Image (tube, rainbow, N blue to C red; front, top):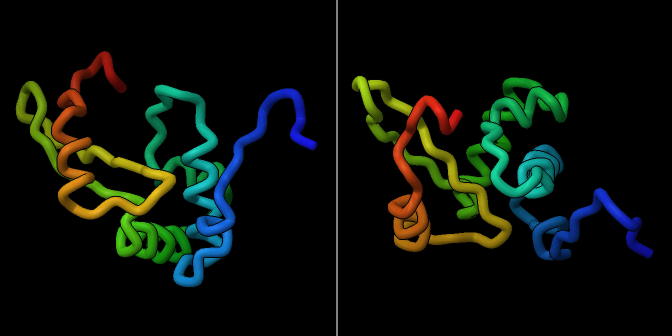
Length: 112
């Protein structure tokens, strides 16, 4: 029985993914459970989930290898470079992720 509020549903395929560590699954489910429009980086989520630096690096690598996380570097106003992160509840290939990232606005100070 689902609680009346504050819950997320995840596929068994994601939770039982054979190539994702428990830290990778935890990091992904934390990210996917954030409210719509949240702009929290993976590293910040790892801090809040108490995933250590080495475990975070390994988890992020696994999520990228399996297509759940994609990143791109973009140069915003004033020449500042930022990393945009795309987190998905289904694996995306590079072309699918590139299409979605292309629709994301560039970095602006008000978007932080």
